[in-house]
Image (cartoon, helix red, strand yellow):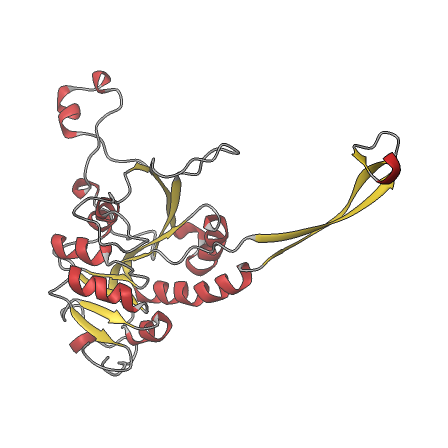
Length: 297
């Protein structure tokens, strides 16, 4: 990677008019090299915090004629539940990891820019509080629900078949949003609208029904957390213009780069996983692949 430029500067590798980039490196080290206010859109799909809340409950057994357990010599016992102790073995570390990166996302957004933060139901409420603090509550634009219908189904609760995407803007008075460029959906009750509206379709709401990447489809790269292009395409078309610079610093399989390339946007995709960089290099052959602390890969 080229030496980091001062914040707020542009030109060369780190310029919106430079090459499309796939950067192999830790985003905490890469992001400070990028100039202030350069990206009209930032999309990030960080690793979900799948650490489980651990719990331990104090239990004691006492003799009781009404007890539901039978012990030695036929004596009946009742289980008495005491204090419940809980702790989360991942929460603190996860948010200490993510917060400074979200602060960098705010810095890197243009004044008319938009952040899309893709999480799941376990973390979205925590992220909302954190982003309110970083961006300001008046900069919250939407919570998008991506609903899909694939995979195993538990019978012990309502099966979870959605992700959450939190949308924040840098400036609520001047953010870019182009509804005319967004792909349209069929009306659920087409008989209730005019033929002209039926032909045009309707603007998607904040609930997006979209299939996952097909295991046998042409879009599939083999990367385990790959997101569908159709999902990201809506974000890119709504929140950026042709020629704008867009950023994904948890890039994974490079879906943002693939969409941006087709739509005429410039992009920077960052990931520290060598397998992700290998997938992106194959998927985005026109991008320049650089290595943090080195040069062209």
